[in-house]
Length: 179
Image 1: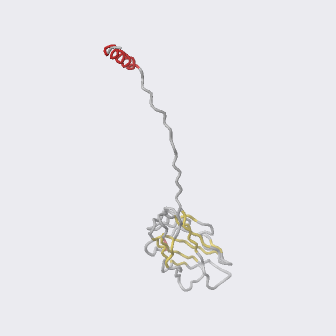
Image 2: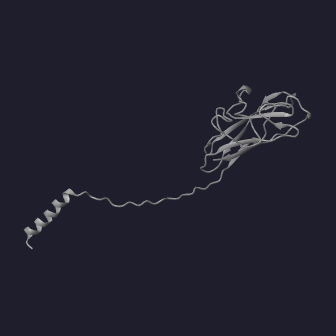
Image 3: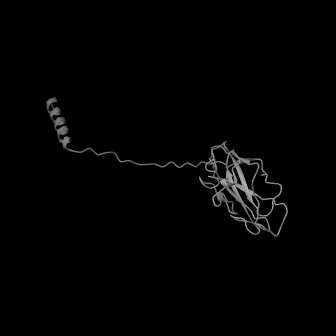
């Protein structure tokens, strides 16, 4: 075959291809499955709140000291939940009444005024209550606390309005880290 004829054949195939659309390659996808592991961890500095040495039924006070909660996990931002417990014959409630006490908590850098504690949002219950931008929130929150950071936790105690039992009570607050 001559070179001229070969050039015409190649040119002819090229011209015929001008009216055709090009087709794309077929695509496939793959998934990547990654599992992150870690340990939630926090430390507490100062494990006792100081409330007035004594008060009458119906009394109320903000603790004179706070406890510091530090997220000491590695690489995990933690959200804190709080709960408290009944103290027989007293029961934990949102508002004090006969044999019912109220306990509220707030994350704050300094002692908040009693009026800053919100009944409802800041009230502890006997079930875990998760921190939010409103719940237990002062000038700090317990929401997604970065590793290495600390939060100050303050409490307000409201004694029963009347009671069938006097004496000292050791009230417990449980703080749980979650994500």
